[in-house]
Image (cartoon, rainbow, N blue to C red; front, side):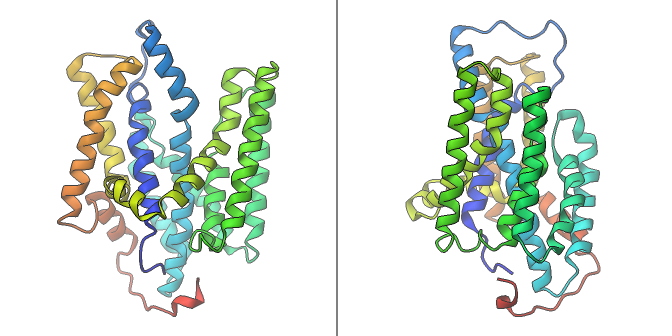
Length: 327
């Protein structure tokens, strides 16, 4: 069991949730035909920035973190002498049920649970490098669909499997020891991104295809850079508010959507422009930081996180083993 949370993971999770606010501003409500407004030049510039650097990238980052979290949770279950698969099944079942009504607002919880039911069995694989190979096979399959059939499918299973591999192989626990792995992964991702951009410039892929193909690699780059930056104490202090948000990710993700819906209903906006997404998104971001900081000053977990934990461990007693058996 990891006795102390990995601070960097909470910070990255918090950054991901706060960043997707600006994308969710125009995605949580269905677009009625004819209601999409005309963008100004400023809106077009901001929209291009969102498409290149934010849209799908930070939710993909969140997806990878979910896979890492699955691995950490199951390692902790082993440490407590419990059944990792049984507890993970209960945990994912709760997520799936909660996520069903939220599908109306495109929240990914049920999708995460669905894929989680499949990939949790990968933890039974003794040779952990096989999990990495499986993730790459999935990536190749989805990327081929995007390149050939122009599918807009996200690499959810790849990102979750890759995240699971990072925790199952223990690489996420020993960042300094595994610098070479992360540096090589970062370099390969950057090279692939540059190749895909070059192919786009040569006219082989359109803009949407290129963004979809680049997204998983761009998310990996974000993850590795942020992970090592958050090892620095000044960076941890600077991003402390986002760590609080990350610890209440489940609660605040749902609360974020609720705030967005209320904001759009009050303002009467059916489809906010990019400038309006920033204008109304920033107060919501600030509100989430205030809520998480205030709540965690009094409680150890967010309300949904506590309920999730109670459901998962209901009628369960555990006995700890040696930490060295699992790390």
